[in-house]
Image (cartoon, rainbow, N blue to C red; front, side, top):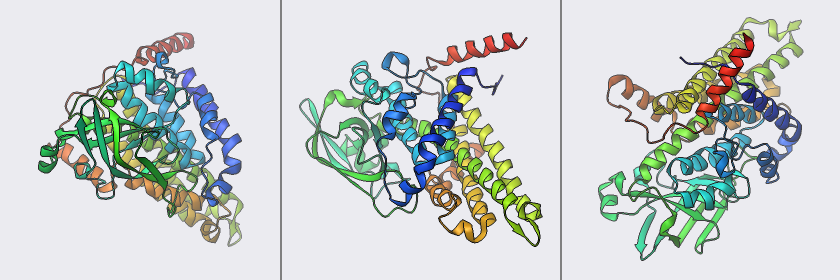
Length: 414
């Protein structure tokens, strides 16, 4: 039975993240956004809240919380600004959770543990100048030389590119399979910024998420120890897709927070602004837009909660997570557009936050699977062209603890 009742711990987490973001970030986000400045001081604060290792087991320095908690944190962070949620998506979702599922014990001790504690920041490198939705189109290669792999290639549109210490990088380790576009020739590697031949830069002409760091990195014959390969040779594509399941989940929950932010800003403004002698909140078409935001918010939240429940129970969730990501991001784009419309000329200015919401929402409709890719995926599931195989990941170590908390809560209510 699906149970969406939040535990006391989950409720406290949501409240803590909401209060922190409102207190420490909301008053400054306008200035950070307009200055195109990423505040690295956010990292220690997020680490102190347990967010950077939120779903990493405690034995590796994490908070050991479940996927619902990860979703709640994502929603609350994006309620204030998308740049905050991106940190969680890339560091905690795409990278850390991949190491939890696929990393060796040595990799977990050397890389995952310091990342979970916020001592090191992590990112994810799949997209390239000529490969986005077509992951098999990557050109980065990893040539085996003795006890090392030599990586050469370029990754772009990488969140935290200029600030991360560790990168989960995907490259062709089998050149024959590269020529055949056989994804079983792709492997995954942990690359450190400090490795010789690694360089990065920031993309300065972004339209949105201006308070976040987005860039590129280049690898010119970067020597990576063989023990830094994540998974077995040729498992890189599987790991990349697994990682996207985790990242898309945080994107879905975050976009839900953006819908809520649009709804709240629009409702407040509609009750303040008057036109034709009455508050514009009394005009039916304004009500219609606000009602649509509320409907989208509730639906999007249920979709990511369902995906989180499946994750907590160790069940395959690619279909459900993809649907949540697709619906929530498209709905956030609609909500942001309507929020600007409700604000009228003021929505087109920088005085109110809805213009920032509008600029920020578009990225999520593109990254981690475009709107069109997700449409095709969902159609293929219905038509039977796509069937999920059993998941690689075992039941999360915290699932039983969440179940116990809920059972104790139910007993106390009785």
